[in-house]
Length: 518
Image 1 (cartoon, rainbow, N blue to C red):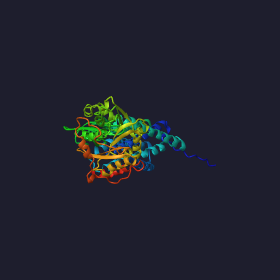
Image 2 (image 1 turned 135 degrees about the vertical axis):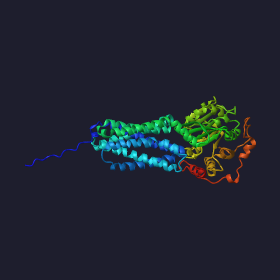
Image 3 (image 1 turned 90 degrees about the vertical axis):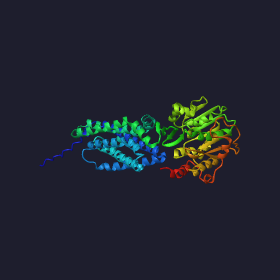
Image 4 (image 1 turned 180 degrees about the vertical axis):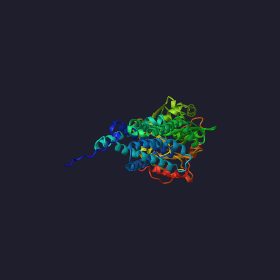
């Protein structure tokens, strides 16, 4: 009789004999970190390269593709899986943590910035893509397959939700992109340290990895402390003048520079005004409209969070109320508190006649029920789809409903010389919703030729209907009439109407301004 001998069962990995909750918590942390890196890359690309929709779309696509490659590559990792996991967390912490400072510092130096951007996004995505499959292999002896998949992906998605909530509401306004990147890089390193210390399997290589983690944390911590200096250095490279204020808000990067002659405001690197000549722009934006409406009492201003258009409106004592709607509270608070800017806008946003609301104008206009004698539309140029919707026929239709009988509106409409198609697209879109339009333009030294479109429901418009305030530096009855004349190189050209479903204006804007963007 032959005695049968059962084969000895292979010992489960040490990780299998440990409570799995720690590794499930690691899943939540690395999921949060992974999405934060993706959001940082998309936000930073939109700050530096513009067109937030395109940047986020391509960054997300590239990142997810890279994660797919990482997931596929994870099958080639053999040997002690915890050792691979700790290595991976150190790499993710360093690459993801240093992403924002590296990209900010390299923007002015690297000729192929997009190549560097997508290389870092791809590398981070590959490393993040390896994490979850690797953890699932570590946990496979602890749960049944269906339970393992359910637990890991549930925790993964919870981490992603957490990241999507805290990124715009807490991290960007409180820490900024550089510190956020470094903080979450440190979190990946902490995960590596905790796993290294909790599992007995890691003892043979614990000293080696501990040294690497400590050095990496010290490096990220040093950069965290120096983040403001790093950002100041990058902005010194980007701007010719001294940067006296800079802040990242959930909506944009605000920078204020100064030299012996002027203050300049930049949003996402784009010049918004120079104190040396902004009076030309804002007088032209406001006074032709208000002169044509001598009975105007209530005015709505959309955009214009700097308060400079409101400053011009307050030169009309007959106005009873001015309601300004601007998306970014960081912008309006800056121009309500900064002494240099209060001197520039004459404290306009703190005036008792002025009400400030921070909201998305596209949604706010649809919910508002008031009527206004005049509406001043002072949005940034339509360089991306999120702003392009504010120049659409749908938005202008909603604005018409907010006009009181006999009311008028005026729209900042970019340059009729440098962006000829864009300018006339705005005029044609206003006309398409039943408004009679009066295009006009002037020269602003900081920008060149700049254009506006005045519009109303009827064809009657008189540029000399009412008196102009005293003390204007540019606008007179004569200059108003001069602004109505367009030379042949700025004359009307055919364009599509800017609809929500085609965003033709954004396409025209990219075509017009493309040759002038480095």
